[in-house]
Image (tube, rainbow, N blue to C red; front, side, top):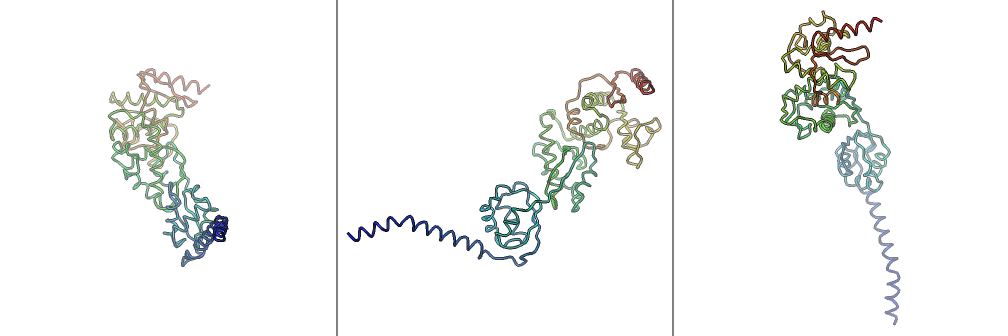
Length: 346
């Protein structure tokens, strides 16, 4: 009977013993994590760690170990999970102090990442985008980033212009938040070209080639500078396409303004003397498209070129409100100019 009573007491105590064992195990684990993990040689030193988009707790912890902030990434990853950081890791550059995994995890949890904000404006030049990446010398890497096919969506790669400098046309104007430092230019091109493909892939005509894409982008850059009102852009694109098909010069004032800009001269209202400038960008004296783009097109300008208005117009002239009068013949064009001048003189 005493034996059975002993088993009965043990059975009743089993849950208590299991709880105490679990508590002891947790305490030991906490001790190991907190005391036995090791301390970096540069403990207390300030460390910068770059976390890239899409990295999880294990990836981020490995970056911290690689940077010398902790001795073992797995210890830091455990603390990230314990503190719930693993569910809210943001990309950017973090500044922390080297030390035990727990201390680094706590500092990481309260730190704000340093982010590079790059704004690509419609009409901006490649040099403008490079200047916005100028911190840390990344502006010099834009050309390399554009030259790498891998930075563009896979389905867009066969359509990339052969000239890397013209690939800037496939960066959608927007403000992009990216981690600064090495590789920032590559991250920018990947994000901005992915946005372009998302916006325009459905409108790319069947059989389009890389040469077509480059020509379309150059034309879109001209449409961008010619129009102030979005509703005019498809008609302007239609006029230019008509002129190209008829072997007529484009006679775009925007290209003349750009030609003078290249010489350091800013003009606003193009005169008859201005169009005499000798430049391959002067589309009054040179037929066809200029050799390069004159600025990054907006989404609406690209749409206008990919899906132009069906029109038989060959001329247009700007009114005072920024809109345009479109005409079929040169005589109608001259009459439209006279009417606009008379209206402005009143």
